Image (cartoon, rainbow, N blue to C red; front, side, top):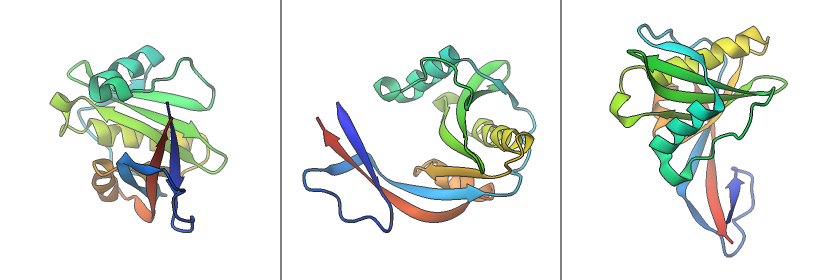
Length: 163
C-alpha cells in the first residue's frame, strides 16, 4: 500500500507527489570496534514467532516480521529476568553486518537490552570474519549507538508514495 524512497546526500530532490515518511530522517552509521559488554542481559537466537510477537507489541500494525528463516538473516532475543525484553535483526553482507530492526518492550527499556543486542550482533559479525556493523538509525537509536562507538556518516531523508 506504500512505496518508500530513501534519499541520501547526493540524491536529487524527491519526486513530485511524495510526502515525508512518519520517520522522516535516518542517520547512516558504522561501528568498527567492539561495543561494550552488558552484564545482566542474556542474548540468544530468536525464532520468527518471537520476533513477530515483540515487533507487534512495540510497533503494532507497523510490524513486518519475517515469515521464515533465511541463511543471511539472524534474529536475537535479549532476556531480562527470564523474559524477552527485545529483539534485534542482523543481515549478513560481504564486508559486514547490517542492523535491520531492533525493538525493546517499553516497560523494559533502560535496562540494557538494546545495548546487549548491539553487542550480540557485533559478536556475530566478528565470528563470521567481518567486524563491521552498519545501520540506518532513527531518532531513538542514533544517540545510543553513538555512545556505543558508532560513527555517523550521512543523513537519509525518507519519503513515501501512498498507493
